[in-house]
Length: 395
Image (cartoon, rainbow, N blue to C red; front, side, top):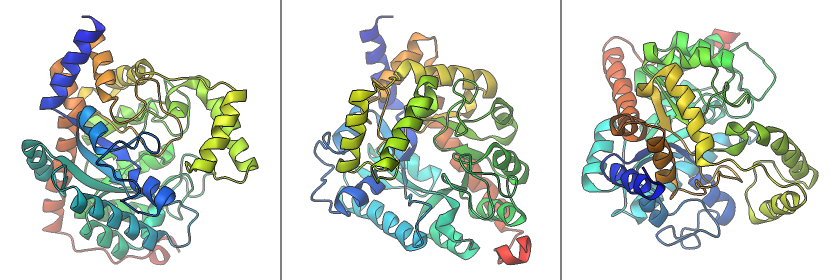
């Protein structure tokens, strides 16, 4: 199969089974760049100079569903109201572009959007700090449409350890396990990206429903703590969960790990947060890269992760979570949201069947949300909302 033929086949497949992507940080980019001024960043037209994401490129990339991240930084004292503002941003986008975007709260909504030719728009809250140790706040986010919660971001919360912080509770505390149980009762997906491996294992022990990793790759292929160890991947078939491979170079390319550490330190030395993607911060990044050429990942790099993850977890437990607009750098060929066909073409060239690719792009994501809904329906018949507090369970 030639490269041109593979790309044509990839685009044809995505017309039938589009990408259901687990994580996109467009709302945070809109907050940071223009304080939600949607006229200043009208994503109905090309925003290539400013963003990884706009509607024309989502269409070109074959995206049919997107979990928009309603992320806020974990060092913010106002995490809950800031998260509400992020939710409001997603709602504004859906209202502004009704011909392109459709609000989705369920697996059935995802399929309805696909049938209509619109992009199903779901939400995921990135980090347990967004619930401020409150199960009532968790239920409030669910009522507003949030369908997954990433248990931590880069820093620990009081009840769960992060992959990139010093261990505090050894995984999940008693209250952390109660958060997982309440998420199961609601039908909110438990997202284990960003959490420590101990937290992954504790969550798999505690959950009644399938989990997701909204944007994580394989630790065996790239040894970064943000990635998933094989022993955890091995548990996904019994759990029914889905690991959604991410494209972030520092998580998929081993050579990029040390380079990124130096680039992050350079950002801090210039007074910027290392995740800052505002124009001034990106200029600092560009100057650093001119002096220190960046190791470049490709679609083949990401495919290496998927090959390994398929071998360990099986194709029924894989998905895609690009993390666009949440990273300063992207792989060559996956430069923005128009690039998904390049990954599918790469996998076709490696012998992935169209049936397997349909699971990767669409079917697994729909199935895992549907399964969480089924578990919630059963639990709600026997379990009342939990009013436990962190003080009552963790002391």
